[in-house]
Image 1 (tube, one colour):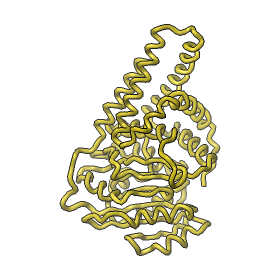
Image 2: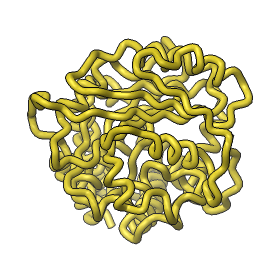
Image 3: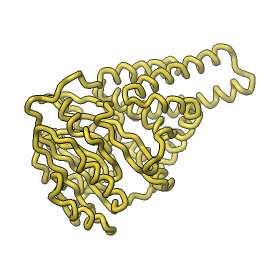
Image 4: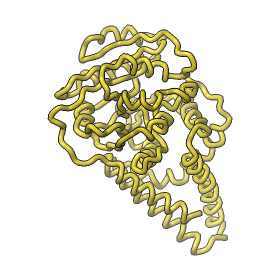
Length: 358
């Protein structure tokens, strides 16, 4: 079991390297882009998002920013109307329903339908983008590139630190997502910061087959699109990194984790196998720790645990160096005891479903 786990860590490390973009300059004639953002009852987040969009550095191509008001009952639409027509912003007031669509996929679908350009850039309404966001996307976007995953940092509120367990955990998921892209075996993705072509979306059948699932507009969609993707990359550059502000509502985070875990049955066999393996391995890890601390362990068991720690630390720090956040690596030591327990809990809780979705 440990040998398989060590092989998995090496697989992730090599896949991460394979997923990185080549060094490139901005093309002389970059392609135009359509930014698409769905917003539902985000009046408290929209001013910061819109301000960050207004500060985007210009690129030598046309771009539009489509913000879809998704049945908001707060002041979201009023705020958006005040920005409409400025900085390339288009507002779509989406009050309809699309049969078979659940969650925000209907709003995203509408945004994609009205988008003028082939390159579609996505983030969420509770995020803020850097001024260099589109410029960095233009730099790595080549004619044969169909998909880009960018990095996102989670904050509770403005002025909060990024030195949190959730960001260490998130960095591991991004390393897994990058490895999946590198080996063309998608594992996870993030709608907070991704790019794909409209032509790819349409060729893959869009949300057909996954529209009834409340989430999955990122990872399940990537899994659908991968057979049609010519080239996909992970771009960890700080120039493309997005900040996401989730607030302090623990119930919201709790339901989000359940929602993610509940998608297990919709994933392909390689993701199911990986999840099942991780579940069993983490249970055995706790059993090994109990055995070791109880004094019943042996030198071999201790050596295996030490090697596990060293390999995990190397992988996490390798990725954190790419995103320029090596200081988060200090959280590895508490997280190695917390994360497996959290994974086991949500794996079990996710099979029960029943979560809240705004």
